[in-house]
Image 1 (cartoon, rainbow, N blue to C red):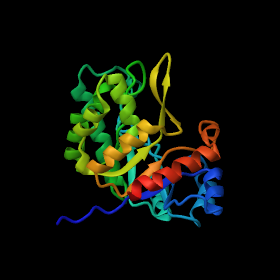
Image 2 (tube, rainbow, N blue to C red):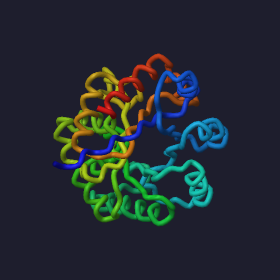
Image 3 (cartoon, helix red, strand yellow):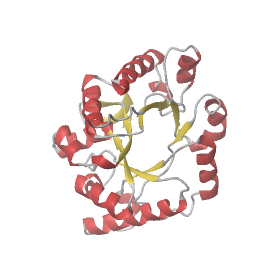
Image 4 (spheres, rainbow, N blue to C red):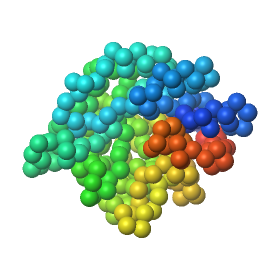
Length: 266
């Protein structure tokens, strides 16, 4: 008989609503995920006494320069949080170049350079996170090619943070089936999974909006969990600041965390 897989730990975005639910013992969360570097000290002071923290605040791999990064402060924050790893978005924007390269190879090499620089600077293992593809804006397509993701992970010897909402969005705009797209990724490298609910915009198609998860999102997460062995499943719903606080409905948060707890332990 083979050994059974260990169950992933459940994490969730920091929000006042999450802290309220936890204080009232209405949800079970093992880790708190924090992504706002601009208010890190204030939010850390509230979250860290309650749970260890997964820090998620890095930029993207295709940037021309990382000279503005406070490496020492970032590593100190990672130590304080207890984060076992940190992730870089595997993304390349047209605005990362003065003149856009004429080949995917040049884009890929720029991302590899970025990944290697971050890997060398971080005191914990670096993961790469797959990002959404839209076509008309956002990342260049090659950054979302499963074979490119796998190749960069292999070349840089780093593992994957699988975002299943990003996967759904990319598959929709690439006109591919989510199941096939999922299975083409380097699933043996998955160390953490992010999940939330995308939104089907009538004009722009499927968008990464961090809404409440729907049945299709839970189904894709369950499939991903059968194919991977992550240490964490993180719900990216709720948050603070103008971009996220309007997506922090406490009832929706409770519904998702109760259901996700059942998913990760089943």
